[in-house]
Length: 171
Image (tube, rainbow, N blue to C red; front, side, top):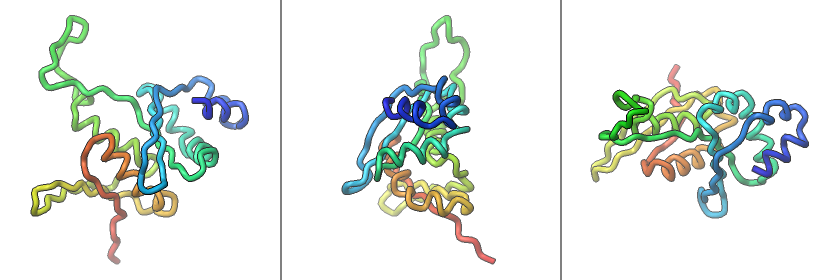
């Protein structure tokens, strides 16, 4: 939070956009030996505003936290299947509040601004599941170094095994 405020003060091009934005939480995780990643949770309603400035904001924050990747994720709510509905919350559970929908949205948030072009579930002989996520090859140069970080952050948040790849194009 302090670094975002410092960025607002020091970077005039980001000052107007950062003024109305805030974060709900931040968490630091270890990706592998020595490398760390910072997960920044933002309010869901402000996610679109963060997406407008995210590439510049991530670049500036990664300069400040040298050697650490920064990932922005929206704070989302998961409702249980048998959620007792209060008088305020009438009706069935919204699709956006299901476990699957929230985990898919987290996956989209992690790889932003890159697009996901395909997903495959791989079932191994021992019964374990691996989700293979294919990213847009046009962003190969920007994202290539972060693939391991993406996988570790997703597995930390959802406890699912995932592998990020770029599709192989055959002429």
